[in-house]
Image (tube, rainbow, N blue to C red; front, side, top):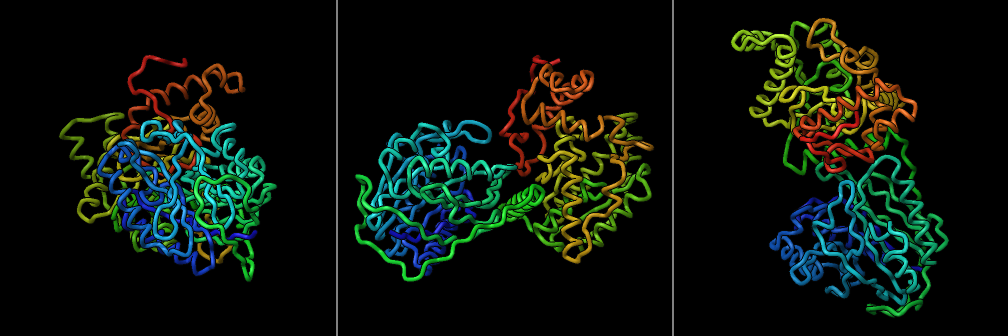
Length: 555
């Protein structure tokens, strides 16, 4: 029998129970208008996700349950809705989905496999469920799993498959990382074949702190072939008709036995897959936009040096917020090159963002003379005066300051605390310097193909990187060339290879020793850096947690 599903790929906000409920109701109404029989929502959509230690707070648990009951009474009674929320069972928090029909909750399912790796702390936050759920909807026996349940071989999905459901529904809160969409599709295909039933995988969108959710909702048939696939990073309700067998199992709950007919079948769509640079660009733009808007900021401020990192951050901010909400400031010192301000002014002209110049040399001179700083301390003083200037303008005018450091710099500690490291959000902190160049070239090419002015000045891309804190300074004075440095960093940071493994992989021993020493020494700096969008499999922050005080050395 054909069932019409509505996969609601939407963007909730953590803690906004009323706002999230309104989003759910709006999507249910849209699903009803499209003639859907089941509306499916992401994991913990009512509370937002991840809620972290809010899950442990009894008041929040009770508020979630209360909001769910109110929502159930408000949803259209002609459709079954599958809604993720936080439940409290025997005083303990559970990651749950509710099956809502006829104005009330008919069944509940608790997530059985709780991820406890990378950015996830679900052993800390939830109590695991231990049983499958199958509900009969219009004669079709529908099995339900939640996100991580799908990833465990021989786990709860194997038990669910043994119950021979006619359809499997999986709500998800699956954060974006590079190349993850291919892994998801392979997994969804595998589980559908095991269950011998079509499978509907729905994922949320939007940014939450340093995470971003890319949607990429998928429906496959019993053979694992893709029926429909939603666009990445776009909110919407995807309507899909699936062929599902009836009466295949012994359901736990019977909601309806009546068969349904679809007068006119929907035409499923399979969204175009994004390339690597386009994926990353969209992820950072969405993460930045939601961090700014969900936290109530009206605008952002970027220190524009004329270099590639600040230019890329400004271009991302313009795409995320529009030029009228992006403010740039150039802060030249006596060591700034002639092209620094010229390139920053060109960036402003290309994008339409507001730009001003604040001369810092007198401030630097006064501070240096009063405190008598020389050498490296004097170099860092320039960065700190710039940081103080940015934060002063932020306080005065209400902008959120964007830090412009990339992952290569963060890894090696190549930044000045309370200087270029200041800010409330760091959009490019999880992309290496080589990615910075790749993204900049990609964005300019997209502009050219659209007949627009490329946002990032070519000189910012091609000139040799420099912090301009002393005469003729270059990044290469302090760091290996980025092309080789980033290869070592990816192996050491992302893949967790040790010294011997790095040398065995072909990297020069002296280079390996130098890079490892810089990375290990800089942990205390990274702890004080602003949050920023995670795009790699192992970002600094929740993904990679190392002690600041440690005698362990790979050297």
